[in-house]
Image (cartoon, rainbow, N blue to C red; front, side, top):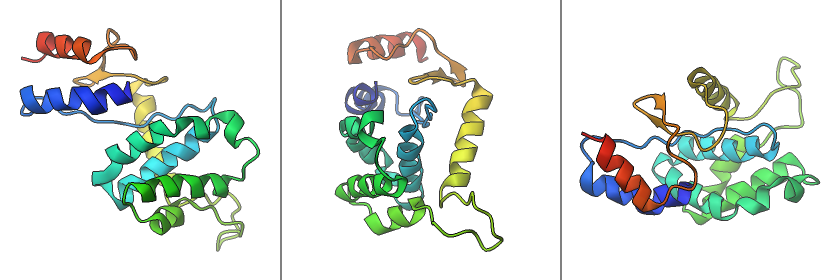
Length: 171
């Protein structure tokens, strides 16, 4: 669905509905895929460092998504996965070091001796998860229209189906 929305639906909205509709892409971590957290942390880092490049980064990440599926990361150290994600950001013109600085988890305890110290986007991810839980979002993709889940829109929607749906539902 991301590719359809990014390449086809966004131009339709810009042309026909720019003053009445806004697309908000919220990340939804799928905890049954452990690397899902890592890729979403990379998205959160991009939002902090270069928010205008978030969509382009997301498109690049979707193109490389197989590289981050379970079998391709199971034997990789977490910070090594972050390095690969930061490299994708760099290809989109985002400063790799800044992304990596936000993502890297230290192997040293925190100043207070804490061992579960997270990284520079841990609190962002906590807020994202809380927000999605409050909305009742459990799977991807989930489309909300005016804050309410729109179950008639499926992941296989074509650009034409999106345009028909928008024409019928946007006043």
